[in-house]
Image (cartoon, rainbow, N blue to C red; front, top):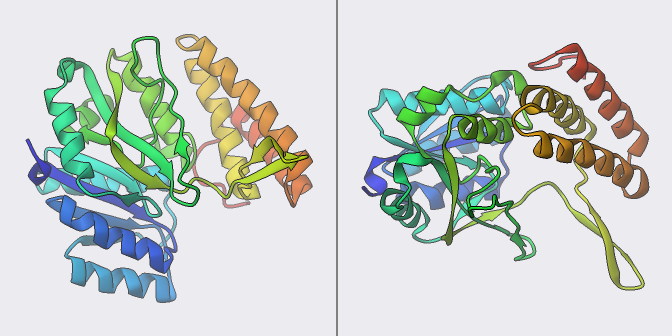
Length: 292
């Protein structure tokens, strides 16, 4: 097994010029690549079209924002239609390092628990600070959950376990898939020899007398809505099988709200959207909310 079996899937949404560069860096590492665009317009879309011709990747233009989950699913289904056996997902702002795909394929296919593995992810390094983003481990050294960006998985297993949950739209999609496959007895692995440069949120460190007190993520109000709404859905779905993780989600919600109030701008709008998301979560609302 090598990169010749792998199709890279990237979902874009108004990509910046540096995001287009990420696509050209990724393209030589995979046999095929598809970019699913969720409603970019103007110069952003023109740059994608030009890059598609220059780097030789498929471009699917949705014309509107169908959500991250649907974008991932469309990319995976295109890969399946082209006969690929493996798929590797990426955020538009994630950048591969040399040899990443081959290193991860080798780790996956030679692992002693190969038949029990659902997916493998690299180590994540914040491309702005160089800081390693810590992973969460189970007692056996496997991962509690895995981010979508950088995840490598066999397409056959993705089909077996079901596609990404479209109703989540954005936020919690990787969390849901991670828990779902673990419910089915599969494991999540980390390849520590492969590094993906990642840029999560827009973090800001808050210090007092030079010492770090806390860090805020500074997501916008709309992203706060979906995150909180989907956390409610995740807790209700998995509380019976993963009670400790679901309790952590409650704690994460509380911590995030406190940090928004203390250290972020537009705090009251964000808090209003957080509450809105919680209420819609309990109402069972899913999908895109066009009222935001």
